[in-house]
Image (cartoon, rainbow, N blue to C red; front, side):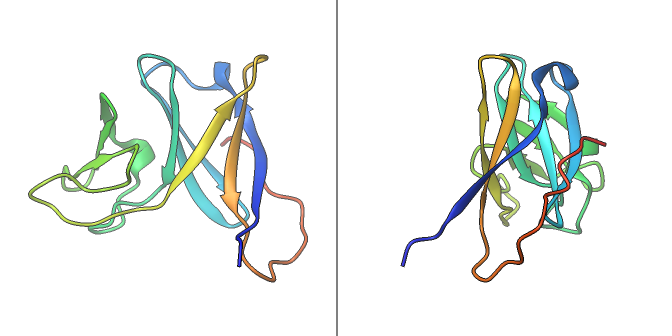
Length: 122
């Protein structure tokens, strides 16, 4: 059985400062978008696996975000907490079109209701 995916437009590259982040809500999921120093856009679930800290408010260092609550370090590419901590969050594929539009790929839930995604950037 194959899982279907859905691409959602979530903003523009110019909406996010280098080393900045944005919090957004897409289909009921709270997601954090991060722009690394080289321009790469990474997207993860916006909660630390430890105590649910808001990762979009954390400090980014390379491809790692530091949770603002207890300084857990989360790899933005894999979603894994770095040693000595253990835990994982969901990551989402991103794509930046030639015109700077950012798209996020979501795994569609089986039987999900057809609805327009709430994809504005807060």
